[in-house]
Length: 323
Ligand SMILES: [Zn+2]
Image 1 (cartoon, rainbow, N blue to C red):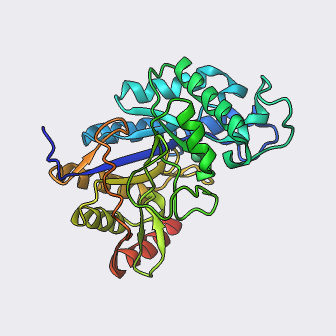
Image 2 (image 1 turned 180 degrees about the vertical axis):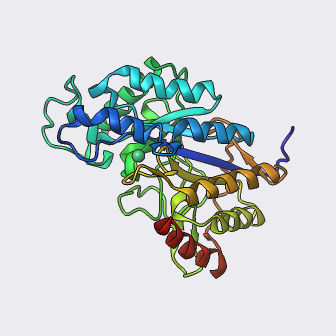
Image 3 (image 1 turned 90 degrees about the vertical axis):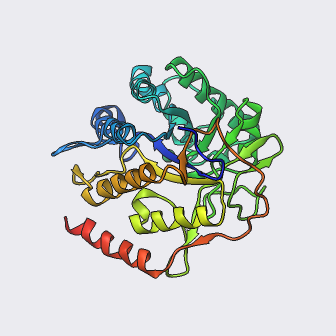
């Protein structure tokens, strides 16, 4: 079906990564962590990556999986191949995500001069960032990705050098700009809402909105009610925005500490997918290397949602704790 040019391009982004809950005994903890963070293993079934891929495909939606590959320098490339294989088999898009906390955990030394743990990319020089991004692309390529075109820094901990380094590594898009996250130190832009070009790379910012209490909030699956997501989508369409970026994670449909499915968030994701599916004349899910439009530098105001969708979030967060 040909989508109308006026449709809002929706980028469903899923940061796909694994954590061991600290840095001690990580080799012992890793198998359990991989099962949790990637497969979403719970006492009631799996709600991670395979579940998300199936749901997206059931609703005929596209999503971009920002895959973190540095962990495989410690635990082996087969784990990364497993992740990439699942995403590509489901005909979804793999792009690069980096958490440099893994740098000093690698079995093969990456930076001999760096002994301490550096949490964010912005703590590395331009040359070091370039080396890490290049290594990430190489790891994803070895795992089966033919082409990587976009980048997102772990925890949005990027600076202007991150954009330059990604561009120097041949990437066309970055999606590390997040107005709501203090760790993000990209100064090239001042509160942008739509994709913009910086030097020779296109920044695709996280969508943020003003909630019913007057606070800015980014469009993350676990951080917003369905009503807020729906209302912000509708507002973006109404104001003729061309791009909307949703954030989620491979482990966001479960309660990690209790190894239980997060039924409220699962239902929220299903409703979000169903809404996009039902409104295909208005919303068009896509990958970064297609349909990106960068002619909206005149959009200076964030979108806003009213109090009712935000009140529903408070109610849903209470329910999440209770069930
Ligand atoms: Zn991440």
